[in-house]
Image (cartoon, rainbow, N blue to C red; front, side, top):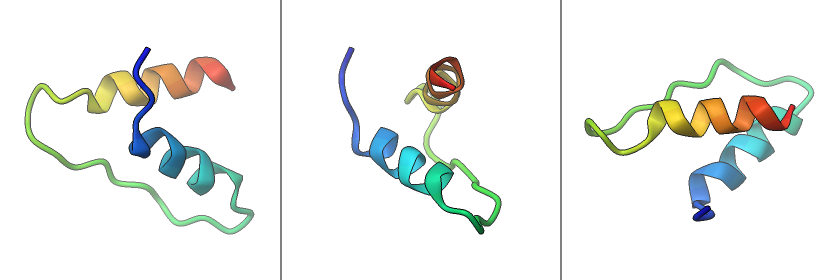
Length: 43
């Protein structure tokens, strides 16, 4: 599996105690949904 900067950012966001809603934006077919699914499996 390829490590991405977005994975690190998502983990940093999740670890905050007072976090704001997260919006993932980007072009089609770049792995936004896959990123969230893989992160959810780690929880």
